[in-house]
Image (tube, rainbow, N blue to C red; front, side, top):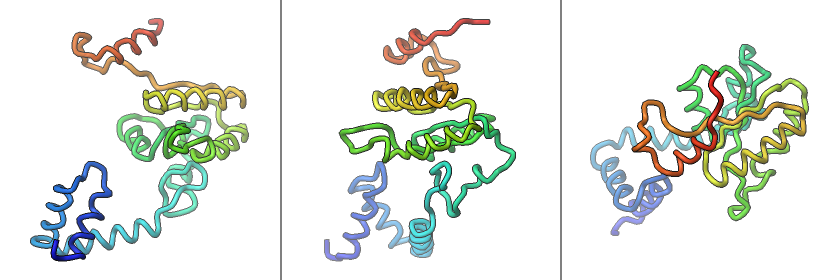
Amino acid sequence: MSSPLLATLIESLRCLPGVGGKSAQRMAFHLLERDRERGLRLADALREAMEKIGQCSRCRDFSESALCTICADGTRDAHLLCVVESPIDLVAIEQATGYRGRYFVLHGRLSPLDGLGPDELGLPLLAQRLGEGEIEEVIIATNPTVEGEATAHYLAQLARAGGIKPTRLAHGVPLGGELEFVDRGTLAHAFGGRQLLD
């Protein structure tokens, strides 16, 4: 490539999830050929976000201040704490449900091979929050992967040790789904986790 700056731009765009070499190249050429003004706004927004967005000191969600808007909201139910793997999971729950409790964001799941243990997930901070006596239920909303299940088990033990009721999001057959089209693993998990009807 004749331009080192262009090569650097393309390589930098590849850090985004799902963006390979060809996609990064198309993005770079689009910005340079047709949209330099918005490219400059994008660069400014990226720089400002990288410099100013940190983590909430209470829940570890992304925040520009010491406390995020959810932790600072006095109308949220302080007795409920939903533990999620990532900020995007928090957004999904906020958008899809009427949940009005508080959150704790792990920024990952237990994975010793990747160097993610309890300290990296902020579990000492979580244990401290559980020990404050305000939380009555911990809703564990980790993903149904092997690491997510191991993390859920660890979180449940942590909650029980503090005398707090741990609950887990239900997993299984999707609403409106037909059994014949559900994959074997999902169906087996749903069958094993069946519940008594009232």
